Image (cartoon, rainbow, N blue to C red):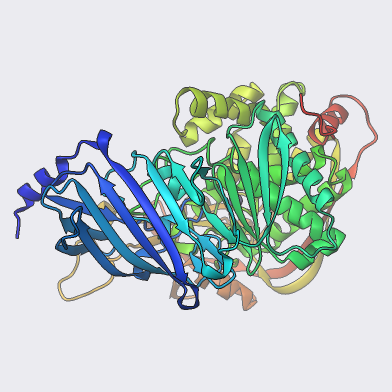
Length: 619
Ligand SMILES: [Zn+2]
């Protein structure tokens, strides 16, 4: 065994400049769903080399533990001699390379999950999710990579290969990436899919279509995608890639964005109906807009990536939520969605958000931070959590309308996105902080936007009507009785800092300093006139127990749902404990509807500027 110091020296001895990596993936055994990967590394020249497989794939905020699918790992030197290796972490292989100028690795990867972040190999198609297929020399991501694909035998008669990677001229089925970040960001679809193409700003956009019935017009699909790309690139004045590939895949649902491609899974049959087709356009516009918002306009935590662990950020409500906002706005600008359809969808989104009790317990920033444990914010318990997708459209619209109103309709959220793009992506080549995002919004408005940012960071009751009135829109709410009870209490669950915890008691597990994290349920707000407000509960109160049971968001929610006449909360206020009885009122399900006012003036021009149709003109 080598000492730690010697290992460190050995691992630190790299000179990256001359390192070259070439992969070959063969797919000769599709019935076993097994890829065979060969990797040739030249120029590493250290006695020990660590090779790592990412733990996650960008765009999908969950630990995938890809290395569990790897088997039959082997290492040899340039002369074919076997090299000793050891597994030093679940995703790390340490090879005793003995300064060999070349290292060859071979391994199998099992891929049987049809999902846009997972590998899949079958008789008729393959989907390569590179983060789950390719290892990199530990700490060395910035080296050029080539990739040769030996496609499945059944497809060897001219398979179609669709990917954001650059093809290598003169070499069939061979691609290159300037570094591992690009390789990991370029999924590859192989099969007999159709391929469509259109250009925007002289840049080619390819569309790989696997699963859409022939009755859906290809000309229409191409024209509509082109209109979406035109509307998005018009915001920024450029298409920031040399080519873009839409992967339209079947067998599942969900999409993942990349810098110059997107992997989109959906039910192709749904495109045969107008409503399904419009939903599809909205979904594709979302994944496409991400090439700007999250891949380039991004929070600091989202690139450069640490592929070895969670990359936490409280700004997914911006990266995801504001992409939800833009997905439909782009359709309006492109003439694919009417203003009425847009406002109806916004009203429906408000209803979904307002009717789920999770909004009382979690903010968009908290939901962003929690996504790595709850799974991209989509799943999860809607009784006590929210999805940062859910209220993204409303937060985006409220930023938009406040910026327009404060600047006499001279500035909009487009200016914010463009400003972030130029300042942080183009000029400073980095992500931004939450404070920098807010500054960009408030600079565009020329006024503070504290209330909208408070909606994002707390569970405070949202005064939608007042914000949408800035565009002359009237929001009517109707409510009908429904199951469960209501108290109008907004809370937040916060981890107690270890310094505030008692020292652990010997022999007892659970909480305490050094033990499992301890959480507090804290009142953030009460709805005006609600039972919680009538009981004089205050922001900052710590809820200790609910009818005698230790408090948590789900205990409180379940107790309210059971609809007792009242509940007893034990709370701590400024360190003093007391009991508070809160009456439980009947619960109401709310629905919303927008009406345009007929008045002219600034409000009218805000509405016209916001929901304008642009007519698909490229400059
Ligand atoms: Zn998204």
